[in-house]
Length: 365
Ligand code: SF4
Image 1 (cartoon, rainbow, N blue to C red):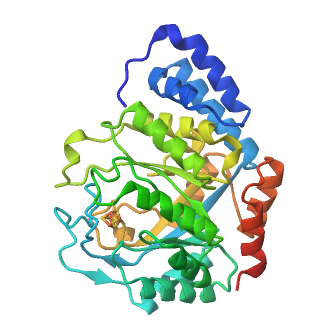
Image 2: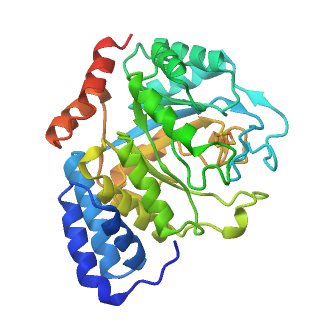
């Protein structure tokens, strides 16, 4: 997505940004025009960021969310995604390691004490499904069902999606990754089917445009965004690919901070009122002025880190996330996230997910 902006397109770019500001979303063509024709500095770049930032502050009530993530295991994964440290063919996860139930509970308690808004449990796709469910049940019991629990495992059949929900998870994190089926061993159809299955089972689905590198074309980014919107995901993020040492994709390098902020801001305008929150990995002040309002504090393993315990590596802790939100003019959300998302549905006039939110809130164990 290293493009040559056409200076003649400036009036059209300005009018698309104004349309995006209204919060009803953008078309694919408009989105491609922004990605192609906004340089990473200068007045158009500033007005793009201001539009996405203003939209987030208005639609999300100038409030940021902090989410705690627990990575369960450090192991090679047969799905062999070329951007992931757990890749079977080149990854560095030579000596397998995993958190015990006690380890997971300790990390849950630390997140609960720090008052994160939600917790995510993440593992490689080969992690035993039954054990993943058990971890969800344990964590859910520990937080007394008071906060949404995200599951981040592999692909799910409909029956498995129902099991995930029964175990106490309320969200499923799943993405059709850029290059799916080419730089991964996973059939893209299976990824999309999992999102459908999760929705049918009553889970909410959070997703991400990931892992973005300079090698991805504007068309590829826009098509993937469009699929995510068509699949009615309710929580969105952007993530840049980290050029991990030894990864076959490292030769492409990484997006600059400004390129990443541009794609984050365009993603925010593309989705408009159809999402409840927007994350950007890795977090930065620039992204918090480009439409992001959701930060992730991480414990345990992390596919973008060479450290087995990411808290000693590239992860952010809850206090740093709070500080970053404050420094960038966001209040930190405290309270019941289900109620917040229900209110945002009504306020922003997008009711698609309201029945699922209410069911999860009312029947959470
Ligand atoms: S990204 Fe997920 S599915 Fe792919 S190799 Fe890493 S753990 Fe496995």
